Image 1 (cartoon, rainbow, N blue to C red):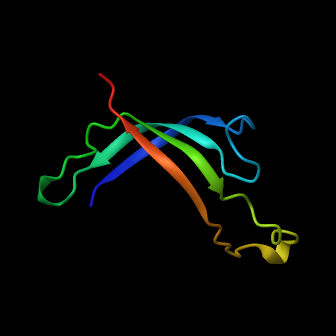
Image 2: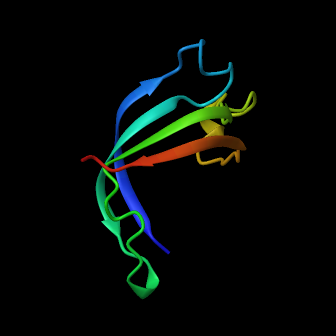
Amino acid sequence: MWAVWAAAIASSTDPAFVVPGAIPWLLLRAVGTQPGPALGRTLSGTTYIQRVNTAGGGPPAAGCRSARDGGKKALVPYSADYIFYRAN
């Protein structure tokens, strides 16, 4: 297992690309990585990650209507493509 931590540096909901109700496209800058088992370093050089081609993931229609809704969870499915880059 490997891990990459990242911070968002840009976000887009441009309707020319992002379908209505989908979570935004993101550009993320990697801020840390963790090697995988057997010294896996596949993503250790990652510097940027893009989330594109999103579908779904928007907030649910119900919930958060009153203070009694605090702490409730809603699982909202989405799909996206993630592209990993390494700066030269």
